[in-house]
Length: 313
Image 1: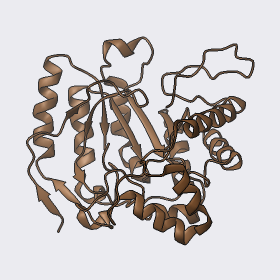
Image 2 (image 1 turned 120 degrees about the horizontal axis):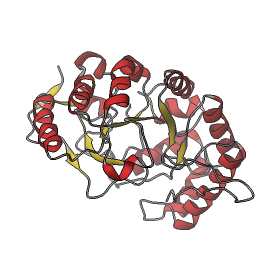
Image 3 (image 1 turned 90 degrees about the horizontal axis):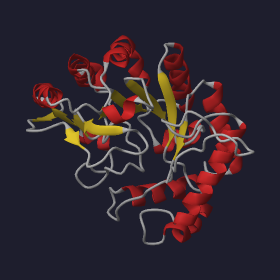
Image 4 (image 1 turned 120 degrees about the vertical axis):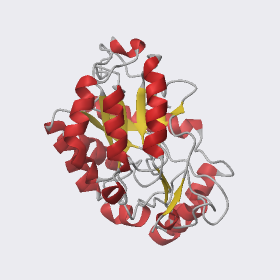
């Protein structure tokens, strides 16, 4: 039996709208995550090295969320709600406990739009519920002119190589399954894309690997692809940086000095690296006519004669 806890609040209001995902709120029904990604930013001693063993269910999440959504709706404080921002909304325990499904039912009831990014095929279970939200959600006034969808769906992808994801993301669906999920969601009429976050330095940030990822996104009918760098937090054994470096020792020890030089004592790669990653990925996206943001309605042409994409970093 998983650990449970009672909470007093579950709907978190952002200080400002997220520039990438267009979310104003977030809600998490669980603590910990069965995807168990080694680079995850929520890692630490609280969960230990295996986050799947530290799962906590917020047993009163639906009761509290309804109270908070009702209060926001009365004040017409609508905004996109990120479901599963600190954990995957469709990790394996959701199949049994169905808390994400309950959250979506409440978002539909109070007409809040939803953003979901997942590494799981289980999202396909809720297609009909998501369709209803997509049609009936009330968007915040300052988004209505630029966007007319009540559901933004994403699949997260750090690489298209299964041998890497089997080591780095052991509890997640395979890259091919995730790509096929994007295609299925698109065929159902959703606005759906890929969060290529994080891109792995010296592994999936090469020109060839970025080309593979972006062409795969296009082939599977993604509306957009967001590309972001890898952050590695902490120094303790259960933190993401030591765990990721242990992965490198097993995967390719020759990469360790490159990472040590790139990150040093920092959690983030340098600004120059991020600018180069942005430039490389945007160039490939232009070539394959896939947008690089959620709100951007055009992809920059090579001649630069159409609207440019907003900053990614």
